[in-house]
Image (tube, rainbow, N blue to C red; front, side, top):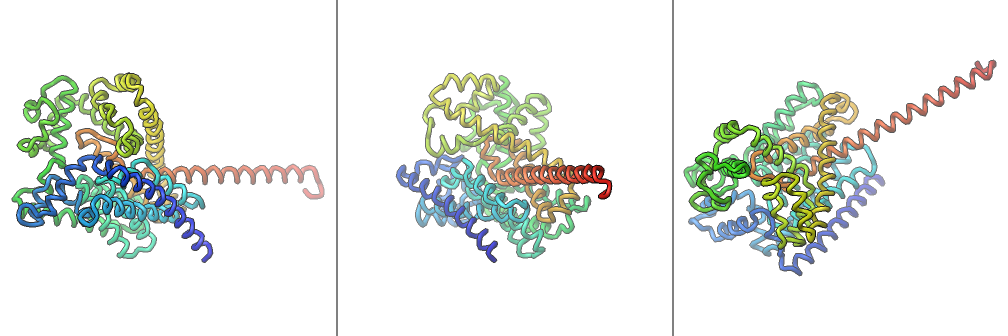
Length: 482
């Protein structure tokens, strides 16, 4: 009982400390008139859609949501809090959700990593990463999707031990909410189920029931909204806006073709600048996946390089600029957001030159570089651990149990889904990685813990060998003992 009480006390103190950090940031929000609230990606469009839905433009709530510029999952949860207390209500709710996910991270680590300080270290690292801090104070999808990914992981891991249907249902509901918020994450459902089947075949997972139930339930929210959308608009899809795969693929083609001085295929040839694709009459333009692959096949090297760059930026950039630039506004008016245009036009060398040409923002770019090195290291550690887990899956299952195997499956599915998202969007950013950041952190912690355990075991083995060698020497020196 005292151990449980002590653990709860440590978790409570951690939540209180993180809460104080966000309380200080909330004071900053109020003092600046919530200036950072709409600095997130498409936050202004999201707010306009929320206000349109609140007025029920189109004659009904469903019609207003169907004709909105963004899918309802992006704002429907925040809407009542916004109507009740404006940006303050949304931020307070998002902080509360984030704190719940910090507690969930703590409990996940307690179940899967047998080191006393691991829950504290991992939970604090998650809570204080720049993007986790920033998004809780902005009107972004990450403010919802990332904590819900953590809660989904928690219930999936907990259910692996409990075998309770309730945990599987709660895991499915959390994942379903994530998919509704970010429909591109629907890929995680077949990905996770496929990994589960593989784990069953390899005999490292003993039951697929919990994951199967969660995957089925996760399909329902977006499927239900898609049916309502089709009934209301007569179109197949989930949004009338530009946040869909087809629009992103068209934009991706535009950027790749322009970067190499080509007009490109007919779908993008008429556009002189990127902003023209956002006009009302052009917003519905799309390119199918098949058409995109056919276009890419004409210049495969260019599109492979673009895909590699997007993956590198999604998983390699640290995201510290989200806190420094998007939240605190440092160097925001000095063209720091132009870095991607410089990279696309001239490559990494041009980007380095641009950084030194803009010495007034060099401090921000240097800090971002340092954070990026940490991100790259964490990603490489995760990849190595996933490969090692595939090779030693039965050992992990025997030593760490079903919870650890389930965590590896869920984390791998989240990271794989994020990678696919980075390949689909027109320009990948580190914010795309944010829902998978907790998974990357958890896998990294498991890898470090495994190395520490191996090292400790090796040290004990060496100590025993030395002791045996000493005994043998003493036996040889003492004929009577021998």
